[in-house]
Amino acid sequence: MRFAGENMVGGKRIIVTGGAGFLGSALCEQLLAEGHLVNCVDNFLTGRFSNVRHLIGRQTFKLIRHDVCAPLRFDGDVDEIYNLACPASPPRYQEDPIYTMKINVVGTLNMLDFAQSKRAKILQASTSEVYGDPVVHPQQESYFGNVNMFGARACYDEGKRCAETLFHDYAHERGINVRVARIFNTYGPGMSCDDGRVISNFIVQALRSDDITIYGTGAQTRSFCYRDDLIDGLLRLMNADDSLRAPINLGNPAEIAVRALADRIVKLTESRSVLRFLPRPQDDPAQRCPEISKARSLLGWEPKVPLDDGLRKTIAYFADEIHGGAAAAGA
Ligand code: NAD
Ligand code: UDP
Image 1: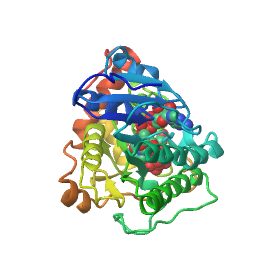
Image 2 (image 1 turned 90 degrees about the vertical axis):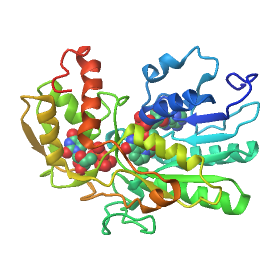
Image 3 (image 1 turned 30 degrees about the horizontal axis):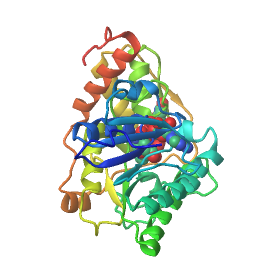
Image 4 (image 1 turned 90 degrees about the horizontal axis):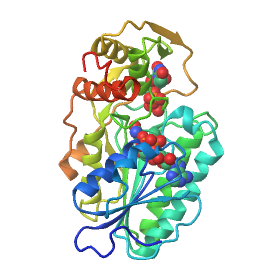
C-alpha cells in the first residue's frame, strides 16, 4: 500500500484511523483543506461510506479498509497519525464488549508499533469516560476517575484507560512522540441517525414526531462540544510543542441536564414530540463537565460555538438526512 498523492510536494503525510466516522471524516476533510495527504483507515464498524464518498477521487485522499486489530502494512513515510478507530456510542460499543476492548488494546498497540516504525507522531482520541462516574466536578486532567471495571461501560472506559497507559509507556520507554486528547461529548453533522447517542436520538425523534426517550429523570448532566470546535482542538494539540505529552481535556464547559437538552431540541425543531421516561442505563455518569484551563493556556483553545447554534446546524443536517431538508423547522 502506498500513500495518497505521494509524488506531490508539500503537505504532511497523515493517517486517520476511524476516518469514516463522525469525527474522523470531519478531521480528514479539514486536513485535506489544509493541503495534507490523508489516508483514511477504517473497517466501517460504525463509520459510513457516505461520510467520505465526496473525498474519493481526490489525489490527496485514499481510503483503506482495514481493522486496526491487525498490523497495518504500509509503504512510504508517515508524519502523523490520528488514532480515532473505536465505536463511541454506548449502545454500539456495548454490542460486542470484547471486541471494543480489543480495538482499544490490540488496535492501539498496533498503531503505536506502526508509529514507532515510521517515526511518526501519534495522537490518541481518548475520552471523558476515563473519569467514569466522576465524584470530582468539573473534571481536571489530574483526576484518576471512578470507573466500574465490571460494568456495561467498562469495555470502553477501561479500554481507553489502557490505551492511555500504552501511550504513556511508549512515550517514556520508546521515545514515541505522543498526544492524548480526552474528548468530552461532541455532536454535529456527520452523525448517523441510528448512532444512539443523546443528541442524535433526540433530534431524530423530534423531527419524526416520535417520543423523546429520556433515560432516568434527565437530571444527569453533560457538556456538549460542537464538532468544528473539537476538530480545531485536535489539530492544535497535534501541532503543539513536543513536550505536550500528558493528556489534555477537550470539551465545552457549558453543562446542561439531559431533560433541559430535550426541551431545547423540541423548541428548536418546533416538534410535537412528548417526553418519555425510560430506565437509566447502568453506570450512566450523573454529571460531566470538562475543566479546560490546560487547553486554554497550552493550546490557546476554547470552544466558540454556543449550544443553540450547534444544535441548529445539526438539526438542519438531520432534517436533510431524514426528509431531504423538508422538515428543517426552526433550523
Ligand atoms: P464513530 O463511531 O462515528 O467513529 C469511529 C470510527 O472508527 C468509525 O468510522 C468506525 O468504523 C471506526 N472503527 C471502529 N473500530 C475500528 C477498527 N477496529 N478498525 C478500523 N476502524 C474502526 O465515533 P466518533 O464519535 O467519530 O468518535 C471517534 C473517536 O473519538 C473514538 O475513538 C471515540 O472513542 C472518541 N471520542 C468521541 C467522542 C464524541 O463525543 N464523539 C467523545 C469521546 C471520545
Ligand atoms: N440519553 C438519554 N436518552 C437517549 C440517549 C441518551 O436520556 O436516547 C442520556 C444517557 O443516559 C446519558 C446522556 O443522555 O445520561 C448522554 O448519553 P450519550 O449516550 O450521548 O453519551 P455518554 O453517556 O457516553 O456521555
